[in-house]
Length: 317
Picture 1: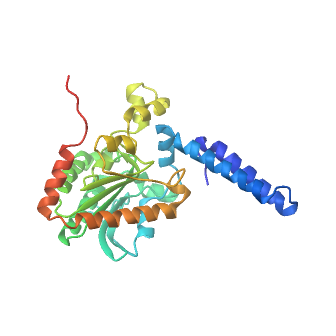
Picture 2: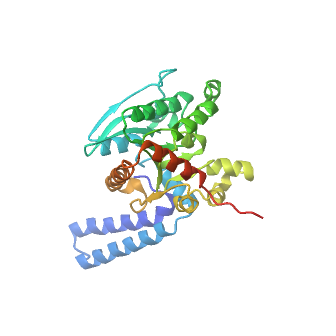
Picture 3: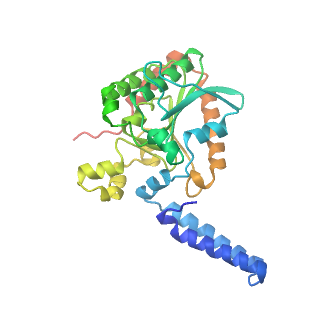
């Protein structure tokens, strides 16, 4: 697995322990207790490194190529999944994957932003950057959830809406704005989970829900750190400064009431133990479904309205 810069010391320590174990198979140089002591030191080193991550290091975790994507969550959470395609207007945007899913006997409509896992799939999915038809596809699926009174789950993972000419020609800004209005009016429960990058209008266009949550090392921001650095300092190399300034990590957003929950990740990020992350997400979705199903559509709409009205902290001079 590809390691990140802040994990260099951990990787070297792991390699050393592995070498000692291999040498022990040929010639017993270390006792079991000595190896156990080294592994305990490794655990302490991991605790120390992962407890003092900078905002930029967490962005790197969020972008790790092995981090689970929406299709991974869907395939591991759902006992049964029927994918639905197209926006019934222009075409099928493969940066969005969605359909009807069953999780432990409970039915959901699940809509996820998908980046892809290799070069071919990333090109096919446009690196998770949605065109207008992607937003229309997401809304169409959400409205199917409303029609059949099923909870809707949005999985957010995008570096932003596609900024190209073709998207602008087809009304990119309008598609995002329309989704904001219509998802706010949705008469069924909706759960938003940021599993990776939640960047700009690309994320917000699918980010309206009764419960908004983030994985511990995901980020949710109006702009990427690189974009912010380019605008503020005319220097994209200051991305680490921008990441700290934006306060886009989960604990910052929980403080400002932008999100409602933080889902803890395995040490080092979800890619280190995907199975544990899938179990955490499954438990969370089922719990939220149970919590929200007791509300009528009128109460859901009022709670959602009040939730977004109260977001953020303001100071008066």
